[in-house]
Length: 408
Image 1 (spheres, rainbow, N blue to C red):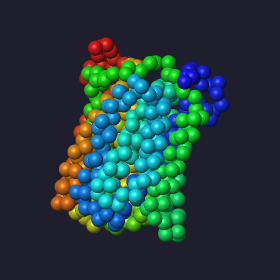
Image 2: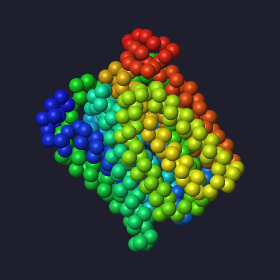
Image 3: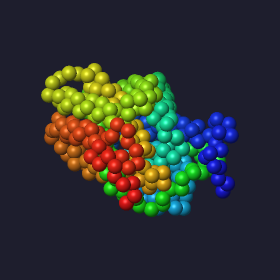
Image 4: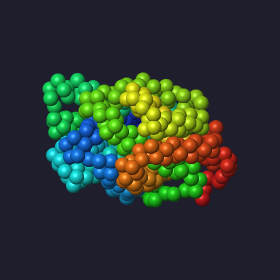
């Protein structure tokens, strides 16, 4: 297989450059994942008859591949990261296409596990490729652009569901087939049409866990825990408590993605201008307020409009999490990016394996307590963000130890 040096990528037409491939993948992945997410709670509640504990179990199983993402380190010994990213996308697409073929707990758990392997392995390697292929001075802005493109792909999927679900009386089966097939075909074409880009910095193909990255690991852990509570229970609340049907739920997600598509480039520029420290403090402070208000929804009857507004705001604050990526890019040794991305993804999913099933049981008794836990996690994350230096770099990873030795 002929490798194409990354330094010569400018000689290629724009559509064949690394940035274009990142954009294409950023667009293709959410078409499957967003469709799966938009219909999932309605499918499980209305077709299979899920309760909160069932939903928690499903999402805990879905997060097992994320917890095992460290296995990517072993895979990239034999498979190039670019190839692994695209084959993982193909798996995600095919598994999404087959989702409604198994309308039972056991069948859905199995196909969800396969879909999750594709999604989590893609995300792990994609984060690594982004940090390897994007120059540090342009990374925050480009990551904002990629977020916006991903939001555009999500918006396309949501828009198609909203416009056609009721008008054509669509089935879950057909929608999953179309969305999953789209992602699989795009990924297969990219595998054929793009050259294999070679990074100037060979990646360490062994387990990497460095003490000087501890703050990055801690923020990844807390980020994964908070996000799981939102993805599992905020979505579930909109269907169970506020009775949103597939078209209404998808419309809410569509509005959310439209807002994200418009704000993501601004978020990237804001991180570049204000720095990672301030961006993360704003994210975690905002999420604390949102989760407190979520909990209050179960005490005060503020209605579905307030719930929808909080849902949108939550997603906007989450987009600031790109600052964690650029923080790591600035403090990391170039060869550590791929193995550390895998380790960090596993750390990000430690809580994701046990939190959904545990909090799913709590949800059936006290939904308010679930969101109160998320608020506490956001507050702890805010404390961690204050330790990020204004100008992080290798050897200057935290404010506690400004000049740690880079070598260990």
